[in-house]
Amino acid sequence: MAFETFFGNESLKNTILQLIRTRTLPHAIILEGEKGVGKRTFARLIAAGLLCKQAQAPCLECSICKNVLSANHPDVLYYETEKHTKDNFKIDTVRAIRDIAYISPNQAAYKVFILAEADLMNSAAQNALLKILEEPPAYAVFILLCEKKSAFLETILSRCALYRLERVSDALAFEAVRSLLSGPTEEEINKAIALAGGNIGMVLESLRGDETLRANEKAIEIAGAVLSSYEFDLLKVLGELESSGAKALLYALAEPLKNVFRDAVAIRCGGEALIRLNEDTAQKLAAALTKKQLFALIEVCEELKRRIQRNMNQKLLVTWLSAALTTAAEYE
Ligand SMILES: [Zn+2]
Image (tube, rainbow, N blue to C red; front, side, top):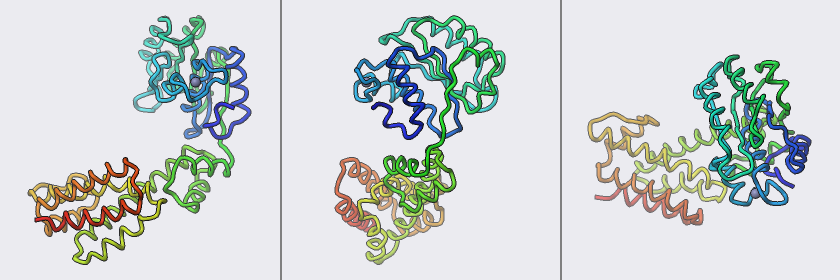
């Protein structure tokens, strides 16, 4: 029943759950898989499974599970390289892990060490790690994440149980994305899956990139419509945001819209645009509006963010935004 928030990889999930529930999980695990398949998330689920005190661990509901999953549990330690490049998982980090490993857990029966990008250790770092893996404290569990297990020394491999996370089916990837993003259309999701396959992380990354692009474009459109002397232009641009499906887009465009107005203020004050999202629009705004008007427009963007967080009805929100932008631009 648990691990249901993780899509696909059913047989691996069952294997791991079985080991957790019978308290037979090996103390050192290598979790292999390409970038984007969810190694970090999966490692945290394993940690939650070890620490959760409910019968069906991990329950994902108790405070222990929540703290582990949000990276706020003192007995689940997470390490990541700074530069994500070869040899960047340093021997000093491994030594620090060793020192901490021999200090008993704070609250839990286990102390879990998640080593992201462990395959970026050079041989010296791996040999230092080997010393801990050879004589680990009874409560310690090490989860080594990697893209290719071949980067590890034989001696490390022989000390670890090896598991592999795979891509999921296209249908499952679709379901996963639908449950996580509200913005993209069915067509957009299918297009992203066609490119990234069942690699959910990659699909999400590409769609989030698209979403940012779309939010920026929309922000420029709105800023342009504010300049127009026809209120109809603004109503037309904002009208497309009235459907409840556009909620994510409206949220995403509040910041870039604010940045355009802020750049206009900078230009108005004789400075340069800072963000340069669209310098042309910022120049036009600076020429047409007073500083006071521009500050009022920035405040509308801030208020927009607050209202979205209060979960207002989308249609009312858009009506309010239209009136607020018009009033701010005419403010004297
Ligand atoms: Zn729990």
